[in-house]
Length: 380
View 1 (cartoon, one colour):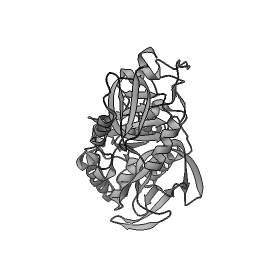
View 2 (cartoon, rainbow, N blue to C red):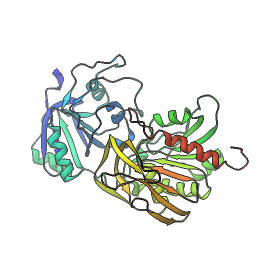
View 3 (cartoon, one colour):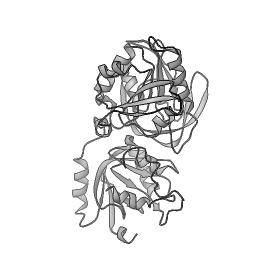
View 4 (cartoon, helix red, strand yellow):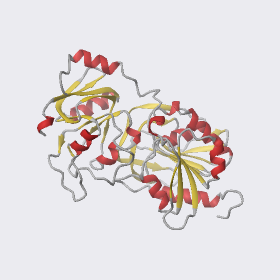
């Protein structure tokens, strides 16, 4: 870490400053400071498009132990605006590793800080909430007051329209493993690479579509199902995907959404959304399914949520709907379903890599939904 001994600062908008050593690239990174409780899966976290324009703080003290490989990225590259760790590994230890975490961060221009008291930082964010922040390293950093002002002038996550920055530019197809049973149109508002793989294992050919795809393109594709992906930003800005979702619901195409997709479906059904204090980010978050009482341990990454109460029934333009899942920690809505059209969604990640896998059966439920509602002229 000889080149990483320069000082680095994490500056929060409320004026709190955490000092450490430069890690990864040198420069400036501005975004929203959030923390994640996962003890593993840092490569998947850093490449998850849902983390776009966020400065991620790892609560696990030792990070980078298994290095960086060429297989586990969840998107085209690292998505975060900055990274904060306590104790980065000096030497990676894994047969799959191709480079160190620090080298991957430097190669992709991600400004990071190491040696920070992350316990104190996380306690601060839990008490004050996620907030605008900046990581500054290398050269002359300037007076603290000027850095705080730069952070305060940066955009807020509330009202941020970010899914357009991470969506695919062109449609691409991920074929089914073996025989194709169904064709699914997946709206990419920040899709993770593991999602089409999970669908492929179930005989699904996935057409991944840009976020601005018009309704006519969906009709031309004539899919058996429609998938709403995860993604970054404030769902209140996603008017285009919400309008498209309403068109899909009107056509009674079986629909499954996750994370940002849950919020889009919620809005399409007439529900409001709100910004959470510090969100849910980690791989150990419990969720209750109210119809069965089953509790799943889930991977999550969201700072916004759909309004509603556990088990609540409500009217929509498409008939009745229900809040199906909530988080026992704080009562946050974790899933909803339309009762008169074939559509459901969850706030968490059933495609989670590196895990947990408690909720992977939701993809099987999507398959069952498509089988029960075949498109016109096709047998299930």
